[in-house]
Image (cartoon, rainbow, N blue to C red; front, side, top):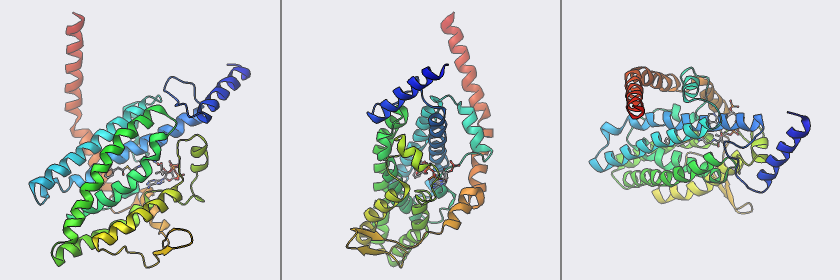
Length: 315
Ligand code: FAQ
């Protein structure tokens, strides 16, 4: 391709971005745009799939049939979100097998939050309330992201996340208004999940390597710090309704700025978890690899069935 032709394609791409026209799989796009999207969408897909594990741990032990059904539906939704996102990612020219391979070999990242253990039932409440709450905060702007398949996937995902968040908050509300032991369980879960939830938004804007370019491409619509602040401002009043204490002695309403100031995040812990040294990283990847290996016969059976069916159709 000549330089003039390339310049023309680039100009047309930039014009679409400027005019809020979605970029679609068959459109020309800069190689860096394609790679950045594969990176973010695949990390997002992996997060949904690995994110099923901490809650899956509690399905058999949910305290009532109603809670069990709701949790089962939530975890099933997460599988659906992962599959949607893998499909969106595949439209950028990477295969599902390559994506799985990246996850199973530890090459791919997924959200730090899913490397923490779920040790009591209250953790199901805290995950729904805080983790899904943070996920919604991050994903609502992504409904307007510039890549069509990702933006459309986010519309459905956000609707389902809002049920997840309410499911979690309801568990917290019940526990916080229950016996002193139950309230203590809720407080303990908030203590353990608060800071990791703030870390979900990623490093500070000053440390974030991708934000500037991703904002220009309208992949990201808000920065990590903006979303984190929005999350704190939304969540603190919810903790007050529960009668629980956010585990941050520096948390204070700032009248002038119109938001909550909060204490320092332990970035050392964040990077340890991201690099594979969190409390459950090995367990999570181990579970995914085992599921892949034990599922070989299912994949082979499905492929044999599909081949048989298409042979019949041709005949
Ligand atoms: N964990 O330059 P930035 C959910 C990495 S879904 C691990 O700021 P970016 C649903 C980052 O990848 C949760 N790694 O990067 C659910 C980059 O590394 P790289 C997932 C992190 O992309 C709920 C490096 O640090 N949501 O929860 C994290 O501009 C309940 C530098 O960072 C999404 O994936 C982290 N927390 O901004 C399921 C949403 N943060 O790639 C089950 C889409 C950063 O250069 C139960 N993703 N890193 O090797 C995004 O919005 C962005 O990718 C950010 C990071 C905001 C996560």
